[in-house]
Every structure is written in C-alpha cells, then in structure tokens.
Length: 162
Image 1 (cartoon, rainbow, N blue to C red):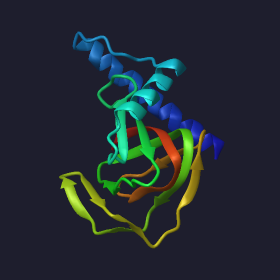
Image 2 (cartoon, helix red, strand yellow):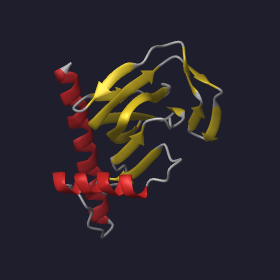
Image 3 (spheres, rainbow, N blue to C red):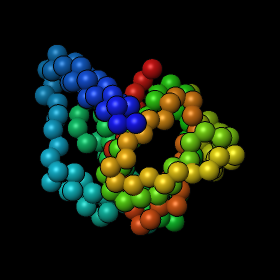
Image 4 (cartoon, one colour):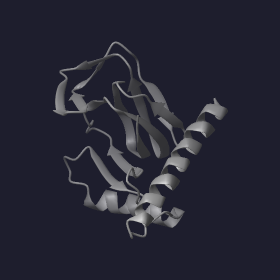
C-alpha cells in the first residue's frame, strides 16, 4: 500500500511541476509552496469564514492550472455525494477523521454540470474510516462521499484529468 500511496503523491507532484511551467510561460509566477504555517493559517481562515450551513469550505493551496485544494468539512453538515466523470481525485487527510464511502450507487443523483453528478448519499457499500496521514485515490466515475465526520475533517484534494 505504501508504494501505491507514494506513486500517487509523486504523480500529483510531477503534474503540478509541469503545470507550473505552463504558468511561467504565460508570464505568471505561480505560488508553488505552502509552508506548514500557511496551511495552518488556511485552516484558521476556513474556520472563521465558513458559513454555519456550509458543509465544505475549499480554497487553493498552491497555484497551477489544476491546483490542490484545502477542504475543511464539518460534522453534522454532509456535503453531497459526488461523481466526477473525467477526473480522478487524490486526497490526503491533513487532520481530523471521518468516513469515506466509495463505489455503490449515487442516491437521488442529478447532474450538476456536464462532467459531474451529485446526490444525497451512496447506497450499497459501507464507509471506511479515514484519519490524518491517510492518502487515497478516487478513480473517475466512482461515487464518493464523506460522512460521520468527527468535529472537522481537513483534506488536500487534487483533481487529476484523464
């Protein structure tokens, strides 16, 4: 499992490096580094700016055409279950814990745009506990949903176009 995790992280880093080169070619200087203090400040910002009924507060960590985002999710407010038709999604759990449900059938599914669907949950498969330090990849076309969050769940997510 460690080799798989390392390969997924390496693939994400290589993709960010390639895309950063594209921004430089456009005359833009991308923000390619976020320190631990920067990430902690982003978490504090998410806590302060998230609206009471907002299940997920997301913000870019670094700049690239396909930037990783910091997602701050809270207990009691489940964001919709989703399917991304054209993107794999790589997650790293920065802090907290909760359950990740992948696979199964999207409940009450509807299109949110040409490439994504959302629903009220997922049926037919159990959740898996995730916590700080876990890394996982959700392949394109796979329903996924975070539930049973303990306090807050802080994630780094990166959409990887196929």
